[in-house]
Image (cartoon, rainbow, N blue to C red; front, side, top):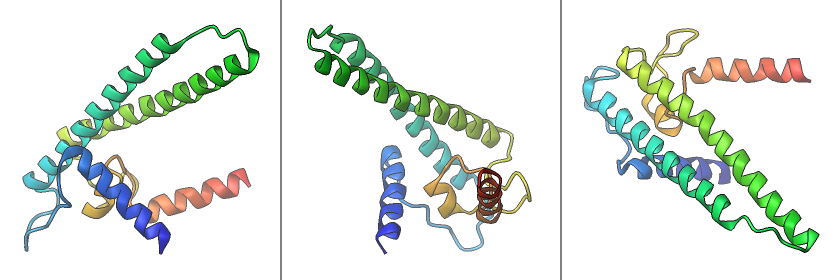
Length: 151
């Protein structure tokens, strides 16, 4: 029950970044209609802007807060803090690449379909994970294979 609530709040936070509500499909609406594409473009572009803004503020924080503490413990704490910040920026850099790739897929009319089997990924899954390129079944199989290989 708790996991479901956390997942729902993460979906809402992605949607809140873009200032949109969960998409409500119209009866008989074609999958990945212009309205749906506009909805996802707005989400992806807002997410992209937010990450870039946070990234630049974090880097300026590192530049401005970098002090050479005489105490080795204080220096170690600061270095660890900066290390965590840099790892986060690296993760965000990778996410920015995925967002850019997803926006490219939208331009090419390939968005919303599984790259392995071609099935519709689904509106709710894409709202939860806008850069998803696999349907839930293919993603599950991929994770099982990784577990088997990595033991």
